[in-house]
Length: 82
Image (tube, rainbow, N blue to C red):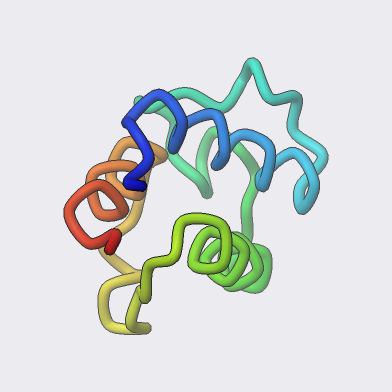
């Protein structure tokens, strides 16, 4: 079953918390991964891999560069999950 927007944001918050140590309540749709959440390019790869596994979605490398905010990633997962 497809995840809802709320479930995706919560899941991304848990992933970012595991990888970058950012408290889950700070991970919100308007937050930038790099500017607000301190996720560097290496950590972003880990976030993407974890999100792909968790939400059963494939995120090609070309699309990763467009995922600047938590909202971008949430919208992408909503559109592409199976």
